[in-house]
Length: 129
Image 1 (spheres, rainbow, N blue to C red):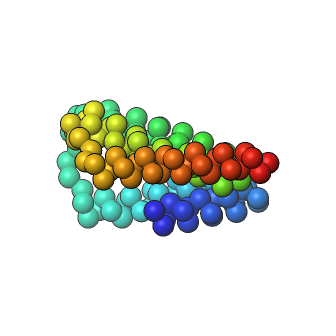
Image 2: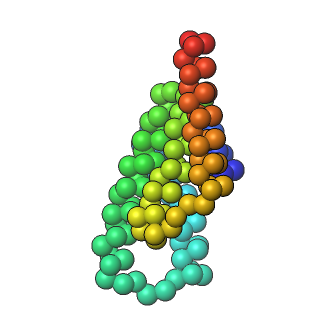
Image 3: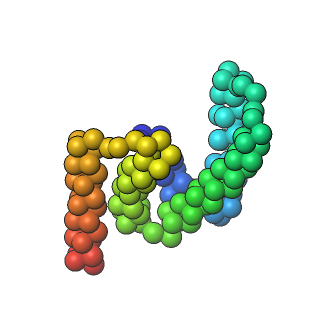
């Protein structure tokens, strides 16, 4: 929540002075430092599956962060933010696929409220432009 918003604000400001690749580099270095500190405390032996999946996760997260950096550099944050609200739907879908987790009524109602709010914001921005 808060730190993701802070990351977006800093990335948006940095895009005025630095290239997209520079922002990605420093984001990666910061993440590496944090993950290394956490790994020293929480480390456990890796499985063979981990050696396959961790590089894949790394590539996907790098592409996701790079896409976000490019989006924030080229568009106002207010136009990008409504798309972040789709994350709750992805969480519901992947929770069901990977963990057989069926969302409860408050989760579904909350997701629908968020979805309709996002549509409302996008429609009002389109009308005002």
